[in-house]
Image 1 (tube, helix red, strand yellow):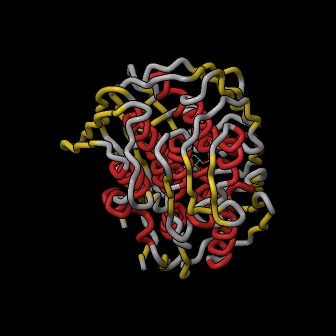
Image 2 (cartoon, rainbow, N blue to C red; image 1 turned 45 degrees about the vertical axis):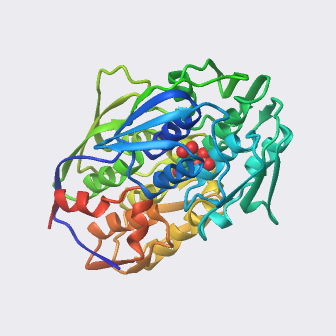
Image 3 (cartoon, rainbow, N blue to C red; image 1 turned 90 degrees about the horizontal axis):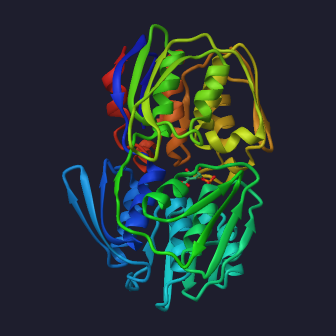
Length: 427
Ligand code: S3P
């Protein structure tokens, strides 16, 4: 149980751990590349540790040296079958991306398992395209983990994705590395493009035309050096706190500013947030910079479905921000939130209601008319890291004390969340 009290101000300069999405990809690509990869500033999150653990189980050497990790890639077919199930923990990215690689491995069988939450998350979205490529995958009824994958030779596909999902896109592209010919994925809206950027860093030709991405297989990856920038999805909580808590000013340094991830910044600027962004000059394939935020008077906005992939993980904290904005905030097209680490729309609505907020729940979003006063209450994380962090920030602007149950889950994306908050909190 975490107790959070009303804050007087938050002030200072912080960094956040390495980006989780980029870290997963760095580990997986390094594992199947030829030659050595050095990764700097790898995310310390439990999710990324799940990926690290899985590649080690598949016989990949990964040596941690201070803040660096060195991986000796064994090439596309270098994995050795694991005698034990591969434990993906809470991590959707681990299970979905790894499935794309394992579907093409010639050794007999891989079993992918997850925790209680991951075991309820839909895997049909990867089973379907991989099966079209010739993969043999069995799952629990309804397409839930554990997944049992029998490696097969794969054929390329052109796959029109029913939903925008970087995890599905990446899974199919990774499988495409093993298929002879062109593999194409087409999304309804663009999702985060870290896979495309990093595949290029690892020596692959990737063609992007609007929302379609193609690669030519069979193709090899070559070891590279990856510097992981800070995770904007973790920075989001401190950005929100600085906007809402009076007399605040916070700078977050060394953050990934990839435009497929900065939808929250775009929306907050439209809401009237005082946010200044300075991009660093770097050779990195990911834009990086710093974000300075001061307390702001916000107004409600409408967030359309095409925006959702660019802020998919920031919606819990956006809902908290909407309670403080003048006028209506309407969010739609976010039905994907129902199948995240928790049913996030339900978690948001339940917790905001417990804190005295009137919110209309939609099948694919919510409507909040602000400003409304938050009252300290006892709320649940529902075992979901982003819900735990969003409602901890809500506690800073609530009357009285807020108690958040089961906050251990913050380790899934940001193990040092409360320590970082304590550094800038003026109570
Ligand atoms: C991720 C993609 C997103 C996001 C998740 C990480 C990734 O999921 O919600 O936290 O690393 O590719 P979807 O692409 O399935 O929406």
